[in-house]
Image (cartoon, rainbow, N blue to C red; front, top):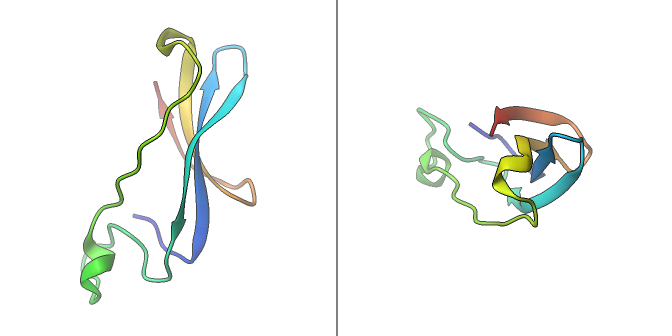
Length: 77
């Protein structure tokens, strides 16, 4: 669940610590994936596409960060 307004990036982090932005997006004030929201758009999930110039086996994790650098979530690869 992501509440806005804010801008976020998906970052791939390699096993050696190299980082590469995979994609970025803007979250409106009502957010995405908010259960029980009164705004139908806020209930809908957010889908994004992207890519990174890293070999799949070199990626250790993915991080979702705000444009201010705050890490919102970390996901193992």
